[in-house]
Length: 99
Image (tube, rainbow, N blue to C red):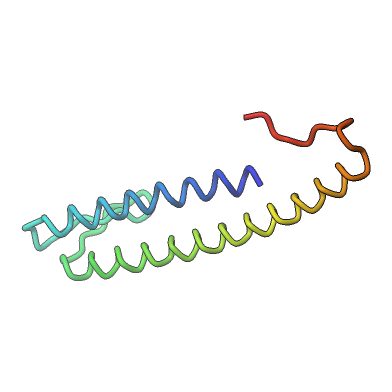
């Protein structure tokens, strides 16, 4: 669950960065744009860069949705397990996470 929460946070940070890149791209007067793919800089014309940026953004949104669904499923299972363990052991156990 913690790993999925970290992954979700990374995806959300990536979405913010992509939004910032989209804003910079809109403000740019340059027709030739450098786009980072992995560790390489690739030159695109502005329209191709916008299309590529939109595709990457959609991919990250899909990953966010997938990770959120997995996280919710795990939280549901965890809640069920906690309730059955608390029913069996009462207050003798503590299953809450420390922040």
